[in-house]
Amino acid sequence: MKKMYRRLAKTSLILVYLVILAGAVVRMTGSGMGCPDWPKCFGYLIPPTEETELIWSADKEYKKGQVIIRKEQLWVAQQDFRSGQGYDIANWAVYDKHDYAIFNVFHTWTEFINRLLGALAGLATLLLAISSIGYWRERKLITILSVIVVLAMGFQAWLGATVVYSVLEPVKITVHMVMALAIVALLLYLIHKTGTINQSNKMQAGLRGLILIAMVLTIVQIVLGTQVRQFVDEQVDMFGETAKDLWLASPTLPFYIHRSFSILVVLLNAYLAYRIFRDKLGFGKINWVMGLLLAEALTGIVMYYLDFPFSSQPLHLFLAALLFGVQFFLVLEVFTNRSKLKSS
Image 1 (cartoon, helix red, strand yellow):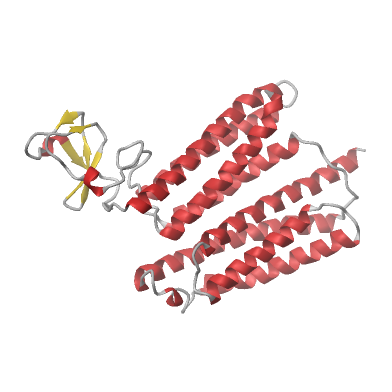
Image 2: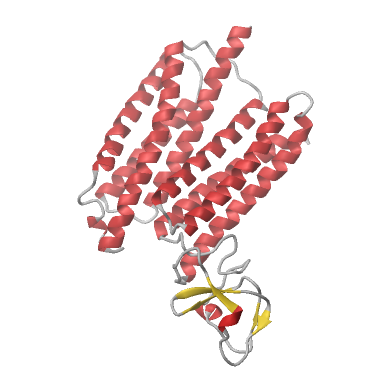
């Protein structure tokens, strides 16, 4: 089982990142309520492709939990039954989690794919936890953290449900994103701890602290970015999908903080790269950090000056999540290297 462990950990990490990307696409396209119930979608394991499937019909088999749209409300079947020639309200109950009752096939299937990827990621982490049993005797922490990853995925699924039930409340979306980053961090830690530790030159304590601060600043930037996105969503509701030039015409304070903070993040990481290259410390992942920072800055500039071209928003978020992952792994390398040097 140990032979499969790192492969499963890497697969889980890739799937979690795909879920983050899919979630960003869901947010960009406004598909978050494409499936208004959870965990099913309009009461189906595989969602409908036409609105007619959600309209009550006479002489039709209905399963318990199946959903229809009637009088601009969602109605849930209370048991298995075949409908008669007239609508019998006794067979139905109003969906009481929220009052959103709109079907859009594109939104529905976009959200469904997001959930499907989430289920695959959950399955991968479950297999990871099972394979971690091989570490139990000699490295119990690996098994314990692997189980925690599974529990975290379950909690993340529950958060996803609360996001739907709240009709996409911004605070819950932010918590959902931060939780995804926490799962990424756990998986990276497990990948790092079960791999080969590369030795590098000793790094000064102050420089190690700056690397940790740089990662924390990235997390702050991501949280600020979700607040900016909340403002953009409100502007979209106000001005419409086509008036992209107005979405950031009058930005709020979080936008200016987010933009100014990005300069600090770039300068700090550039200084770290300079010190690592000058002192020949190794830690090649700083190259990835600088590349991702450049791409992140470019997508931000494109969104602001070119009025949000298609896919720029999910790409911006996805790059930020990748940046956090690389920085976290760099922190692990730096601090593991310090402990190895002390013990040698």
